[in-house]
Length: 70
Image 1 (cartoon, one colour):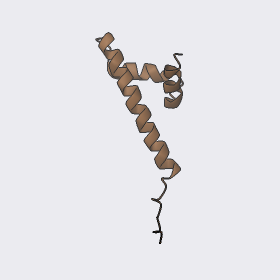
Image 2 (cartoon, one colour):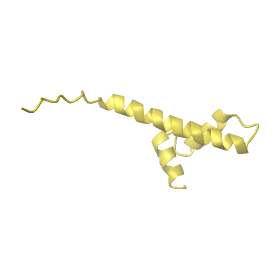
Image 3 (tube, helix red, strand yellow):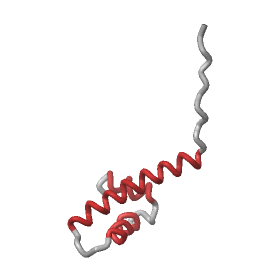
Image 4 (cartoon, helix red, strand yellow):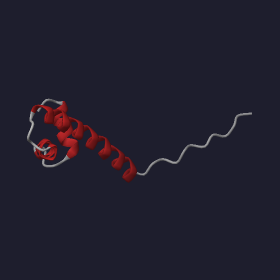
């Protein structure tokens, strides 16, 4: 006899978006830290803002643009 399997509850859209934004933030933070090594004296927060400002402060667009080399 087969055992009944219950699916774990699916995450809400809001929870999935929050997780994705956290992943984007981590990627942008790592990129800013990488740039910081080449630009001493410039605060990492400024570098982070410059990375996202190009895309109108949209994290998704900023990461996509950087990955596509724009």
